Image (cartoon, rainbow, N blue to C red):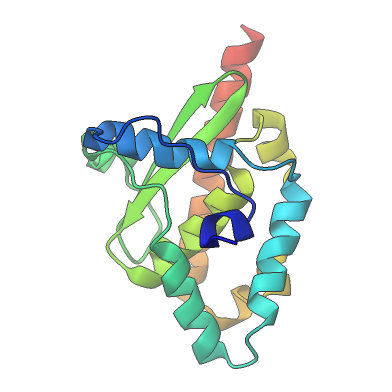
Length: 177
């Protein structure tokens, strides 16, 4: 079983030679092609992944490793307009909306922060605005993340969640118009 399919994703590449934008969009679509996983199932999967590690140093290392899989934000969105305020590190977040679903991409200059935003993207990307707005992100407590973050990183986590929910609110309003 490949690493990608182990975590419930189907990767489809239609061309051998792709532009950077096509690669980024394909990576975003990976999250859209979840194999019948609900938000809750995805969150539980993350809890299960972290439960393998007992030591928090190992969990931090895993968090850093997961950051390597974040759907990277296109260069055109890596500007101050897409920076999340309230984070200790620089974190850029972009959201696109297609067929009633929100798709997030991001980047950060800090490895741990990149891992944190990737966890949020795994759970929230490919969901409807209402699902994002109503999402219970208790899995963050279950893996012990909140209690092991510095106060400034905790504020950053809250800022990331707030920004993702703001995107959802805007897309929800656009749908109703």
